[in-house]
Image 1 (cartoon, helix red, strand yellow):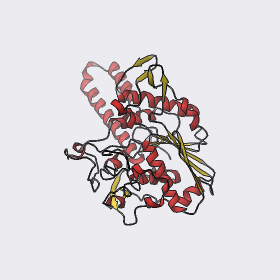
Image 2 (image 1 turned 180 degrees about the vertical axis):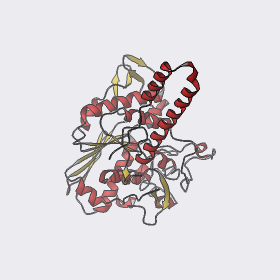
Image 3 (image 1 turned 90 degrees about the horizontal axis):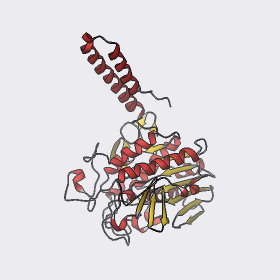
Image 4 (image 1 turned 90 degrees about the vertical axis):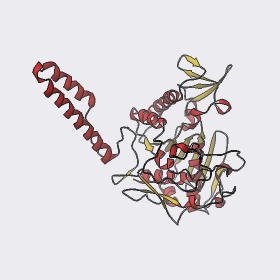
Length: 387
């Protein structure tokens, strides 16, 4: 796909300064006018590039089908949903199986994502298996990766219910293999992508180390994710100290730490992934819905929510972590496809397990019911892969 090449802003500013240096004193007004016109021209060119090709200022490409941005749209009722029944899928953890654990409503199961200017291809599990026959797919990340991994496994299983499968669950590495097709769908569990090293002083989050990356090599498709654990504090925090280069600190700005860790990940991808052999995706930031003030209902959380927000925007705006992801992807040499799921997921305040989460106590407004929203993430992944 050919992209419009936006004008380099630094070149424009340099040219303007050069004109200023050679201008005579009487031409200041004309110089000011020229600068305004140049700035306007640059803005229009960049806006046009973003509108037509969804460049959005990042190197990582987003899923485009016939020039359509799949991530701009709305949620609509589709009577044919859900794509599978949780009771017939052997891969769903209790924490995501909302129907089994007593959620009384079912309307949240009936919403389909509809892009504004094109149709989202319906997921075809048999086609997916044929396209990836003999291949290895790996999700790398935290429990949101677990959410998406289980969703994809269930979606495929619903298409080939009689297929021979093997299922392995371990602490770090889990897998579902559809043996008739030789397709292995793996999950590597890591909260931060970078390493947490046990030292004499305790658990050290090491921002410039990815020794665990050896397990990610040799895959045909990698889908990475990280963010939620970077925000945890207190007893749920997964480390005791942060090693930032030569510095060992007790704490630091979490967005800054995330940026440094994700930059280490980006270098790992650039140094270890051959884009002619392996496709790489980054699963966009998955939102939470603990604070109703984000959608102008300050006394609410996800508990008891029965329908999505209408959009097209989320009142609180996108989370700052989105900017970190965009900044890092922009600097990478390896093509990384961004599954830009954040906004469409922000609209789904109704799709969390809340209190219907197996043996997990409390109100879960972080993960997602299955069937449910992660199925749409996988439909978008499928659309990007077949495009």
